[in-house]
Image 1 (cartoon, rainbow, N blue to C red):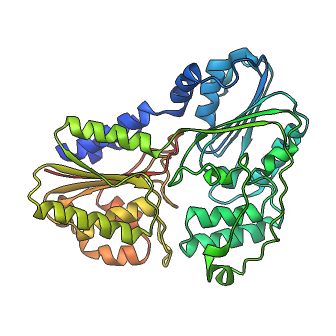
Image 2 (image 1 turned 90 degrees about the vertical axis):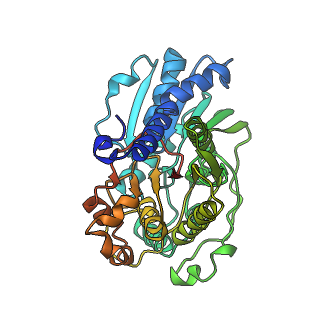
Length: 416
């Protein structure tokens, strides 16, 4: 099972239902199988005899497996940039040429990312074959060849994260500090056909933002950062149009958060729930989202709805004030728990299996948690951004390990 502590968490029928739905969604949209099926119906390299595959991000291993399964010995070279450990290379048998498995860092780039990115730049600089570029979230940290010292780069990015900067603001800053983001990776390529197939992990599914768009030319804009520029002592060079590639370029999003929500909605409808879908593009502060969910929940109760579900997806921001362990999904779960009433079950989970600085993917809570002796201290845990510790004590933290997928976050609330 993907959810390793499934049986411990499934203490009620409602909990079991949400866990089963999430488990089946992760299996249904596993990147290896999904990409293979996509290529069967939409092969962008149909007329190509020999190609190079480059796969980056949290889903890079599974995406590469799907491509190898489809193209087999037509692959001259396969380059995988991942933050996973202990990869079974037997999955990559059958390619025609060389296999490179490179290590990247996350959530901030380090020596692994720098060395691997330089290796990729070097390989691309000597490549003329068509390139199939497989992109998933997490590549912003794993693929980085910065214009500034890496310590200064990370200081700026961490400061912006801690001050609640959303993914759009972060990637605009990353772009101005990078030699490979916002389409600049293409400048090193000597061929004339580059096809990017992308799994989206950002609200709005903007390909410029996913892994900071290494194959998507765009110009950064820092005007919306406001006082954060001064707070984080940010200095960026003036915008320079550095896009020189003149070959054919295709960027296509093949899998996104919306796919998961549509699947989850169908499963809930099959189980007799009226579904209130808040959408897949949610991008707001964590506490504000909790308030929004609770307002809709309370309105639905007052409207005498009998059996309903509230679902949505996206990515929230959290202003870090404490030094505890946790992540945005676990914090969202605690905030909903704190404000909810009646008979409810709520789940919030990151589809990549990693939530913040904890080992959890997210959390599942319900009205039974009010009886826990630990619940009375919920405010102190939230104040210290220590959601993981409290959820572990209440046996509510969801443990999956890295899933090999990444379409941002999902939340579900059900009432019977």
